[in-house]
Image 1 (cartoon, rainbow, N blue to C red):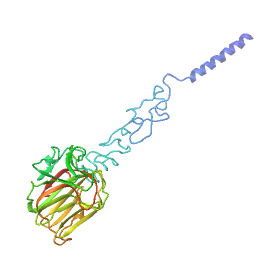
Image 2: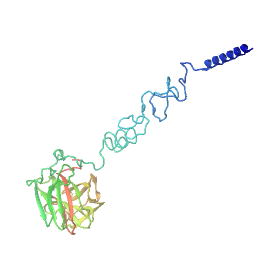
Image 3: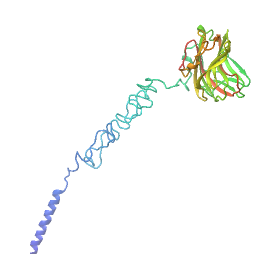
Image 4: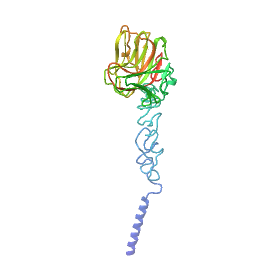
Length: 347
């Protein structure tokens, strides 16, 4: 009776062991392709998207570690690049070909300049980008006279006039281009100083264009009338380019009276500005530009002031002359260009 009972137990245990063996995983089993998550080529960031997927399910084929094709950033991922830009295809565009509205869209400063297709023009320069802080461009300006002051103030070209405590010297404290500029300073505010040249005269057709970069170290504080340049000659008083009431202005004090006609844009301090003006002896009027933008309020002359004449030009000066107020000033003038045709700020 006892033997029969033990045999039954042994048979029961053998059956249990057999069932357990039948249910155990084989060496080839495990989660296969088509598990919990699928993997696309491209890794953690897939083509055009941000969803992460793995091939073969949660534990990859053959083990617990998942291996993705292509590494962490996939094709078009966060660090893939389009032409001119940081993100890849379908990424968040930062920089596009051509600039602010480049091919990839939304870019800040793409290849070729500030503006891309559909903007201000492929390869166009940013506003007021006229070579400031770069080398002098006088050697390639192609004008009658271009003065960079890099070699100081030539006595064969320029004559210096100084009054009161005002001085006009070349130094390297400020420069629009190159390393030096003409520094005109009056501490008391009642003096004037300027440099004059006569080499480019007579002017063809008595028409003269002059361009200069100007930096005011001191803000304008009075409503005084001042000149930054003046064309002189015979037959009439000088034709002045300067300002009044803190605005640019043109005028004279000749037969047509003592007048200054003003612009409507305040002149700032401590920034380089490109000024150009035309003295037209054929039509007896002025024209003016600021950073290559025409200032139409400066288109003044005989039409507005009967009897006004541009003198028969034989000299021009650049500097600082305050006429009817006391105002200290500390300014620099650089890259002066003179010609018989329009010059522009880029030369």
